[in-house]
Structures are given as structure tokens and as C-alpha cells.
Image (cartoon, rainbow, N blue to C red; front, side, top):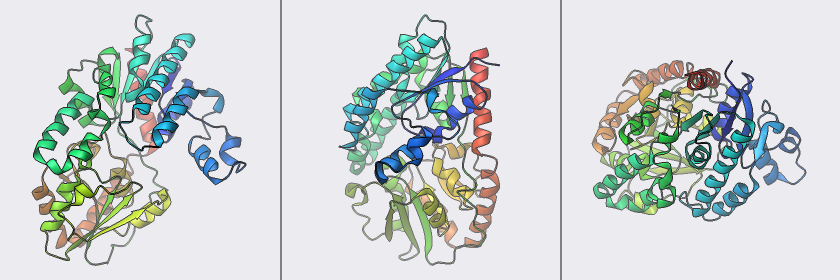
Length: 404
């Protein structure tokens, strides 16, 4: 049995599944985070709906609150960052450092290995140098230096996307210190092969394990009938950004015959007007504020979901759509490349090309029955990627890293 570990991340990352993987194997020493609530606070409505919603999300019924070690200073900084909504907020940078320092302190005090998510590893790993305790990096997003170089090339290629890309966390020098955290790690767990590739390109020599995410097959249930609405309906989930290939998708839709396709954007963020400038003729509907259950139901209206990202650590929406029986068009720069077979259970293309997206959409226009069958195959594939399967693979990877 491997030693119990401290795990560190902010927010309800991955629905607490990584921490649960340790807990259910009696290997969770502590969860270091900025906010976590007991069952009482997760279930009571004592302080109103907003607090209840917040507390409910930051609780997992199988992870005791006693296992959580909270950093109040990190929580305060995170709250301050929420006021300007920018991913590159200096408050986030400080919150990350404070949480990382707390994690290192706890790991040293308890003489336990540390599993730290991307942004929360650097300060902790440095504090633990020379301790002999294993340091495991969970690389959620692709390497920062790799992304920065990629985004700079993208800005030169698509100037209209500059504002969108400059707001990405990795473009801020406040987060540069994360670029080579892999050099301090004894091992790395990655969410996708693309993320591992970014680390290899940046010079990482640490042993790496790819552990792709899972999906709730009950919440994201499979449709049984094909959508009948005209025209072809394409779904997009998340903030419409150039990182997610927004202008390439809009360009592809604009190139199709007028009225042939429509786009539904499911998002909680404001739509960047610079990104959609020049594509006002594209039929777009924005649907915001949906719960996961509402999103699952609404996605079934779509013929396909598009996520043509130029860089994605994984892309949970890929599995969520596939679980709904909706095929996904995504790029090789996402986690989808690890399990999508082109035109069998989805559509897989190279990133950075409106023409490539247009080609697949044009193919789909005349093959909607085929597209539905592809979605059924997508559901079969999604059934292999449950959260229970993720937890088994995560714990196996953790055990291998601390036993090596």
C-alpha cells in the first residue's frame, strides 16, 4: 500500500475525483484547498441560496471535512480576483502561491508525499527540496512556455484574436514561475497525451503518466432519437475564445451555404465582440446559465458539438457530449485525440484551420443519419471513461510514482 498523500488544488477541481481516488484507497492524508465545507454547511440554507450553492459545490459526501486543510489568505485573494473576472489577475497569482506554500508546509509537517495541481506546485515543491518526500505534479493544462509560444504565433496569424489570447493565464509574466515546475517533480500525471507532449517539448525528463478524465454517465445520458431540426445545429460549450478556436469555427460556418447551419453557444461568460467581428451573418444563439442537467438535455438538440481548440489540457465537454450521444468535432490538441477515431465516433482534425472545420461540417450536412450513428458510437466510447475508471487509473499512477 503506498503512503497517504497530501493533495493540493483550489476550487472543486475535477469534482474532487482525484482526492476521492486517494480517499477510497485509504491514501488521503489531507486535501489542501482554499474553501471546503462540511455536510452540514453543504446542506443547510441558513445563509441564503448563494451561500448554499457555493458550499454545496465545495463539498464531497465521501471526503470528510476533517481531511481538508484550508488557506484563508488564499481564499480572500481568490474572492478579490473574482471582481475583475480576468484569468491573469494578480490576485490569482498570489492566491496560488499562498495555497502552494500551505501545501508544502502540511506535507513537511506530516512527512507525506505531495500531489499538487499545475498552478499550486512550484512554491510547495521548492519548500520540500531535500526532504526526501515524493513530489508529484498533476499537469492539468499544457506547459506555460509551450502555450506562450503557441499563442504568440496565433496572434501573428489572427491579429483579431490578440485581446482574447493575451488574457490567458499563461501570457502573464506573473505565472512564468510555473514553466519549469516539472524540473522539481519526481513524477508527473497528465490529463492528456497533448499535455504530456507540451511537457516533453519544454524539456521535462520526469516520468509521466497520462490519466484522462471521466464523465458522469447518469447525468449526461444518451439520446435515443436523432435531432430533426433544420438547419444543422452545432453546439459550442464554454467561453468563446481563440484558445478554443473561435474564429476558425465562425469562419467555417460563414463559408457554408446561407442557412445551412446554426451555432448554439452554451456559456456563462460574455461574448468577445472582437472575435465575432466580421461574422455577423452567422446564425448564432447564446444560451447561458444552464445547470449541468439542463446542459445535458439541451445538447441533445445538437447534431454535433465543436471544440476546435488550438490548445486544451483535456476538454471535459468532449466526453460530456459523447456521453449524450452527440459526436464531437475537436482537434488533435485536445484530450479527444486519445480516444476519438475520425468519422467513427467523432471528427478529429488538426488545429488552426477554418477550412478543415468547413470540410467536416460540409460532410455532415448531407450525412445526418450517419452523424447520429457516430453519436451512438461516441456514447459507447464514453462508457469506457467513467469517473470510477479515472479514479482507478489515477491511484495506479500515484502508486507507481511513489513506489518507483
